Each structure stands twice: as C-alpha cells, then as structure tokens.
Image (cartoon, helix red, strand yellow):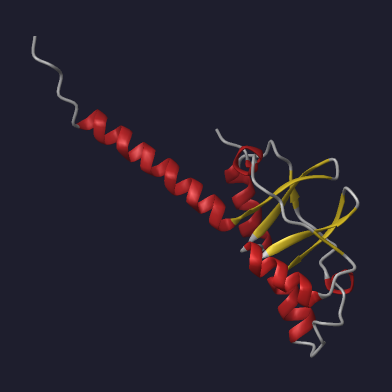
Length: 145
C-alpha cells in the first residue's frame, strides 16, 4: 500500500519565506502551478500560504498585496501528515478538516505537499489496475491442451 511519502518522493517542493510580499508569493505560486506553499524559517516549516489565505486575509480585507508580507497573513496552524501515513488516511484527514492541501513532514523536516487532486489521481490509477486485473480474471481463456 502506498504512503503519502511514496506519492511525494522525488517531487520538487516549492517553498517561500515570511518576508516576501503576498504579490510575489502569488506570482511564484502561479508560475509553479501550485495552490499552496510551505513557509520556511531556515529548514523548519512554520506555516503555509495558499489561495484561501490570499482570498480571505488579503483581497477580502482590502489589503495591498504588494505591501503585505506573507508572514503577516499565512496560516500558522498547520495540519500535517507523516510520510508513512497511507494515502487513504491522508485523504480522510483532508476531507474531515476541509482542506485541499496537506503538508507532509517528519520532525519539522518538510518532505512534500500533497493535494486532493494528487490523491484522487492516484486512486483512479489504482482502480484502473483493479478493473484490468478483474477483466483479465473474468475473461481468461485457458489454452487448449
């Protein structure tokens, strides 16, 4: 059974610092095609900044993204997963907590970030393999002797 650590292994992790502007963070995230970026203090994850932070804490409040710093509007209460957690457990956590991204960390060391889309893509791949196996099993014709 695959773990979330298996799913993020070998992927680039795009992080940001607290001192950049929200506008710079949004441009960075747009360029990288990501919806959430872990916020780092050296090697330690201290928060996350995502689309919801931008929308709720900056745009909806009428703040200027060019002057507001990520450290002032990031989410500091993170929900994390251990790399050995199953992908199903991670998906359940994300649905239960109403989040679309999950930080994968081990002892404050960032391993990666996984999204609901990543989990659903993996699930579809697994189900496709199961269907193929069952089709082969049901329609197998033994060779004539």
